[in-house]
Structures are given as C-alpha cells and as structure tokens.
Length: 335
Image (cartoon, rainbow, N blue to C red; front, side, top):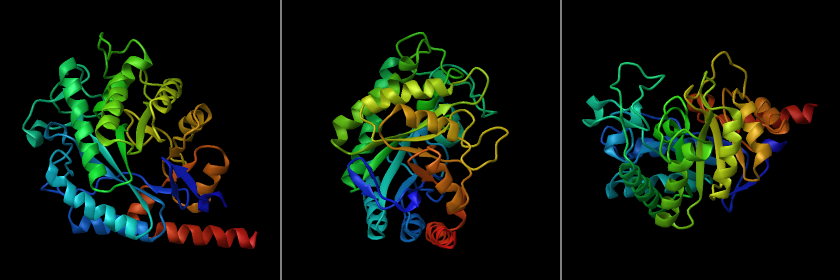
C-alpha cells in the first residue's frame, strides 16, 4: 500500500502520502485565524492526514480575494498562525500555509483598491469585474517583498513551509498564462521563463526573508483552454522551479481553476502531474476529484504523483483519511 508509506518533503518526513490541499473556509471576516479555523484543520490532522496546506492567505489588502479571507499582510497574523501550527503539529501532521494575491480576481468593492494584473486584460473566467491595470516593474518588486514578508510570518509562527499560489487564475498564475499576460518586457509572454520570472523572483525574495523555510509551489500548469498554457509549458516551468529550490510542486489547473472542462474522473489533472513528475526529482502532488483510498492508491501506482491531495471529500468528512486507510488495508487483506 503506497498511500500509507512515508515520504520526505523539504527535509521533513510525512507519515503518509495524503495531503489536504488548500480550500477556503470563509471564516475570517477580520482577516485573522480564530479557534474555529484551528479546529477545522486539527480535525483533518487527527484523522491521520500527513500534510495540511492551509487555505490561501492574502499578502496584501489589494490582493484579498474575498471579505472573509485570512490575511498575512500584518504582524497581527502571527499569533493565529502559531495557534494553527500548534493544533496541526499536536495531531502529528505537517503544516504548510498558502500565500497569494488574487490580481484581477479581486473585487474593488471588497478591497477598496484598484484592480491590477500582469496586463490590462479582462480575466477570462471572472465576469463583471473592472479591466485591471498592468503592474509596473517597480510594483512587481514591491509585491515580491510582500510575499516575502508573509512567508517570514509563516516561519516565525512555527509552520513547516509555505506554498506560493500560482494556480486557479490568481496573480502569479496571471503572469504565467498567455491568456492574461501580453506584456512585452522581461515579465512578458515571449517565453515560459519570462512568464515565470515574477514567481521565480518571489521565491528568491522568500528565501532571503524566511531562510531555509521550505517553499512549495501550487502551479496552474495548464489552462486547458484555447490559447492558454500547456502541459509542455508546465514541464519547462517545473524544471525552472526545481532549480530555484522548490521542495514540492502541487499541480492543478490554471485559468480553468480547480476543475477541468469535460472531466469528472478521479485525478483529472493526472496527465499534467505525471508529465511533471517525469521531469523533476522533487515530490509532485496531484489533485482533482479523488474520493476513495483506492482511487488515490491507483494514482500513486500509475505514476501520476508522489502525494495525493484530497479536497472536497476531506472537506465533507473530517475523518476521511482514517476511514480511507482502514478500508484500503481491509481490501488488501481480503485480496
């Protein structure tokens, strides 16, 4: 049973191959982590989940995706993060925290600020929002420092790692996707490396601010939309991210978000994650519609990934991991 075997990520051992991927709880109207959020993640950790990746947290008020999103934009975030780390660690799991900026997915009625993105291009999947203003190079550098500050707070709180959110059509992903990046400068659409430059520089800034804190990347490697990023782009990007020091690649969709048009099979991003896994030596996580332990085990055996992210099923059932591992063990004993 591969699902219940340990794996090393960023120098730390995970007790099995099951992760809870980041999913918004919408429980933070004041932007802070409260007891209910800690209890939410602790319950999944107590069930045996090896890695908890806490929901996307904004690095700046300008990038807040919703009015009830957790914010890591200030030092007041550290006490709540620390309590969350204690809750997850007390249950034997590891904790990464995802940090993000929503870019052109933001609503100015929520942020009270101008909407920005890679280019002055409407978001292909979010309707009714203002056309964003293209970020200047100096603003890009300022945002890199805001990501770095947020990562430093993650480290100071005692968390195990940080995940940079470059998927699901958020700002870092808006630079990676040809659908939203039509720039003609060094951050533009001329090459995969240029489209990835903002993310690579952000990783370097995080490393300077947070030392040896492990850095994972959630990469929306393929848009699965005409004219968008491709699996080939993702493979190139994965090699660059590994070279830059990423400890894990969490593969998901780009402008298609976390679903894939026309696909409902378990592991609907497995073609993407399998291609990336062949190209890098660091662990690769795959997600997408996994509901049972048998499905997760098959994805591991097929080479789709090294770690399986179980989202909606675990969101709906806090003890999913305990039940899944027990059922898989029983199936193997009866086989």
